[in-house]
Length: 92
Figure (spheres, rainbow, N blue to C red):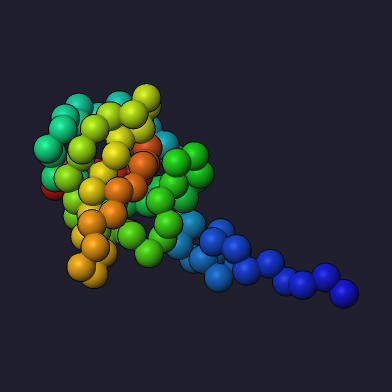
């Protein structure tokens, strides 16, 4: 018998995946290095999606890497760098 999937986007997170549309403004944002941003995971766009545990965290943009951004956040006492798409972050 096959084992049931318990991945990050499995049935346990179905109620979190209710956003439907991606707009042009979500894709094109005027973000610069040093800007404070909040991680707001958009479940429709799965490319460069940060883990759901980082939802709501506030960090600073360190650099742009292609179409994505490197965001530094504090997780407990550790500084972590997350590479994410501009769709999953919003300016604070």
